[in-house]
Length: 395
Image 1 (cartoon, rainbow, N blue to C red):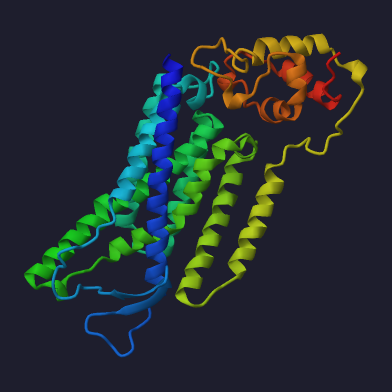
Image 2 (image 1 turned 60 degrees about the vertical axis):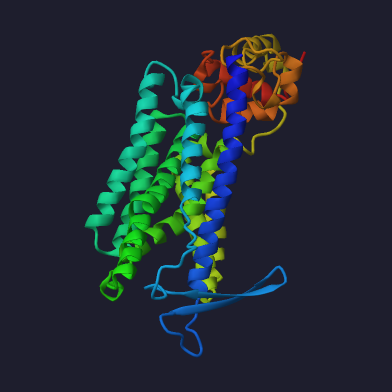
């Protein structure tokens, strides 16, 4: 019953999180596009620094940018804030259901040298707080925008390295994504929104001409703009063990994130009106480098080998004792209501049909069993590798 309830909570929260993220990311992309597409109005318009004419859905729209307001506070002023709040809160709840509730399986690495589930949860919670505090201090103390951007990137890389030491691979990737999302949401609620409220008050007081309209908010929005695609990658990478299960996962994440930043920069230049297509080439080259780097060392190994050298009886025993506890029609391991991803491995024949998946998850990278709950040994992994190389015989 508990596992069934957890599955529905997981589904509901993931659905909510994806919908909220679509609205937040879509809003961010849209407003960054508009902001970079403004051009000086011709003829000049009082208080307007830029205008954008656009067509969509059979209508023509005219956007005007008022850096210090139109001289009054509009009655129906649309705020963009609940998108970030909904995304972060739903993501935190999803983290709790998937990674804290099942901490022994999904969060920590397991084994005598790993963190206990309880300590892993505390580190998970604390990492979000630490990420925001360190970032906020850097923003307040580093005056150079370029130096600050490099410092933020280095800080995210350091967090990822730390997470990879203490969490499972997919949890590590997810947590650096959560750290980035925390920076973005924190920027909205702790910097940008308060600054906007002060701006509105200055308009009401008639002191707007002497008001700093938000250099700090601008630089933080700049960070959020470039963090968006790395966050999206961090969130979807858990579905692709070839990324987080590699021995080079740390560098692979950095390369793929850098490719995302390059793609984002291409769109920024396009919106500015001076498209720099070379950034797409940079992204493609970096992505290719990541693909080569993350490839398993035995990717080109022959599919077939000497069948006689493989003891299929021992392989069947490994499948039964190490895999079938979770991957059975009715799993026997507590916390599993159904076989993960619908993958049933309750016999040698069933395992043979998914041999390459087993190779990816249990041989190329020791990702399965999760947290090594069933205690698979290195000798057993080597035997699985030999069995798969021999063509996964069943007799």
